[in-house]
Length: 317
Image 1: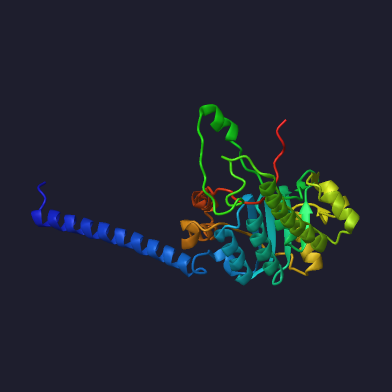
Image 2: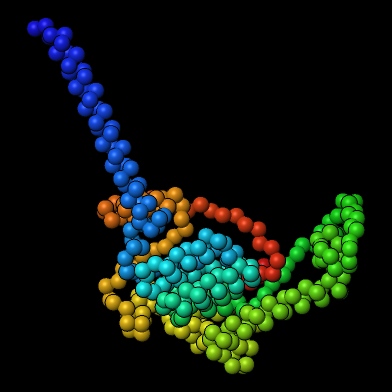
């Protein structure tokens, strides 16, 4: 049976209208989804808008990057009732560690804070732990490495072998000293040694003040070596053995926190966090999608370490 041309035209128009409204509905839902995310703390997510225990991970080399410091400031202004600082770091620059320590002390003045040494809190990582109210470590964790390091390459011998000579005109003998292209003078070594010693004394003062050690105890722990978490408890570098569970129990007992407070991770803000998509996905039950967004938001940073370091690494054999 032949179909009426008017009927065919009307069917085509109806199909076009249905497709149009389907697309419009999808766009509206997407805009609403993003808008709700933007509403949630102007760049965070819904998880951080209610009472919770904030958990922030300090990992890798510490440089005092502004993103981490900003996250700490945001946590201090959030409804978080306590903060867990999870540390997995061999240290970093002295100035970066100082900036992180100062930020954590300001945070601790407003909210109870605990450090969780997951695997290592050495050198600058341990300075970060000192910024909290209480330090928990696993029995086999690494803590300590209280000391300061300044390293520079010496390629003078290599340049001599290849026949390269570099001339320098300086305003004073200690300008740009020590230099990898010049043999270090006793004066330049002394100048750097004085700088290292001053930073070392600063580090030891932090340990003495924050851990309440006497002269003998400080001498024992500040020779640059690392200790296990179990040794750290004995030496006064760590308050107790444990992990997240023990930290929560301490917060509930000593700081009177409710037992049902959820622990919420605070992460560096990539685009999904800025739009609030990861938090909304979790609230909607799409945990796997939220985890994917979190991984996509993690953008590795490469920064050169310059200056005096509080960084632990095992010596080469």
